[in-house]
Image 1 (cartoon, rainbow, N blue to C red):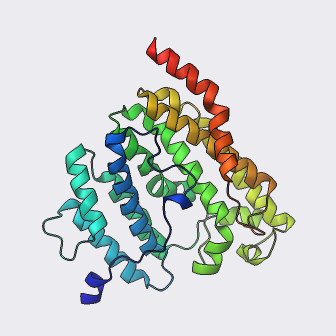
Image 2 (cartoon, rainbow, N blue to C red):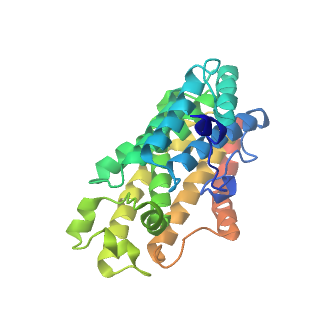
Image 3 (cartoon, one colour):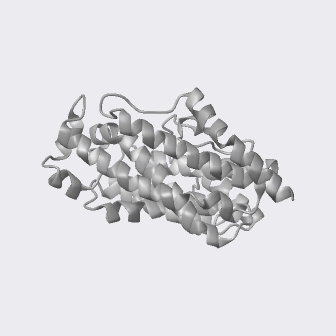
Length: 289
């Protein structure tokens, strides 16, 4: 148990720059950015444990249980991870409920034991705990209405699936973990071994395209999110992220994630913002009036 306390966190080296979305960008009000960074640091530390190929499932779960204990009762947690204690203080300061990071931990525990997802609904059930809580946390942090949850859930889940598609080859190679629905592999006449190739076969491309089509449905349901947000800056942030998600989906439609890791360039990120600029300006003028 001593080693668990001494080496609880297992940082992968990933950071906010590796994400598909801006973490605490300048559109987020300055007083809130610190709290967003603390939430991200907590999620990153817990996710790194769940994705560590050198840890046994029982060890991962024990470590993640200590993260949860540190959030619920930080004074009683023994050997508590610093990222969890910092987030616990942040939640107390802001009044945001702990259920959002606790839902994330539930998904990360599932990552420790679940390597396959049978259906699209099974994958969305996972995303509802591994991704949707991030948007709900931000909505609560900004004091927005819970009526924005539904559109936010769809956006966060879409971003999560897009990330699974980006990393589908690496997840299979490092952890033998496959998020893409097994039923879609079977219906395409192939198996998860298709992920081991250096490029997608026609059957593998069919699975990828089916995932992208379903993700398009999520993004359609996410589109109203900016208009559901009352705060101008946060509304603008949501609009930019919706645009980024759409652009990444388009890139995955035309490029092969088995042949390369598909990411957006800085110019593509800037283009996503530029395309939103007219609507952002209109939104700002309308809100001021």
